[in-house]
Image (spheres, rainbow, N blue to C red):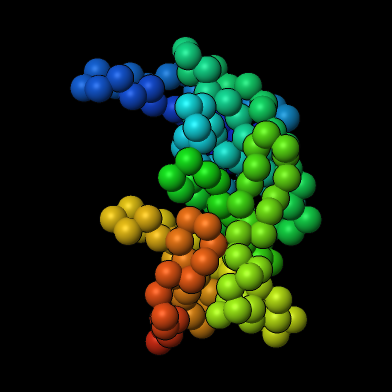
Length: 174
């Protein structure tokens, strides 16, 4: 992936077993200032997720590798992380969100009924504790929510999955 002021250029690979073939690079002229690009699946559809300064666009990958704009979502803030995780797309801005491509909306990812996450859900932004990344743990189906000072494990519903936070000695690079 390369970004230029005129737009994003994507080179995709079609996975067809051992005969994977690169597809033609495509210029996506409606996009500029792309800083994160991810490829993943939601339900039976394959997408390219493109994060720009204050939005996320989902491009549907067609049968022949063609890209069609499917969803455009305003995030209000810059995305620091974007991952596909077991049939869903998660992003980090000032908070962690789950992206709904059907309704073109963002939903708070942290469960508001989980009292152990109240600080992260409500007070963290006011105290300058902002998300810096997301890590999907495939073996346990957990997501590690990374903040500058600490990490929190949650399940795919946004509920705490481990009793203790991780405290890092240094800010992680995601």
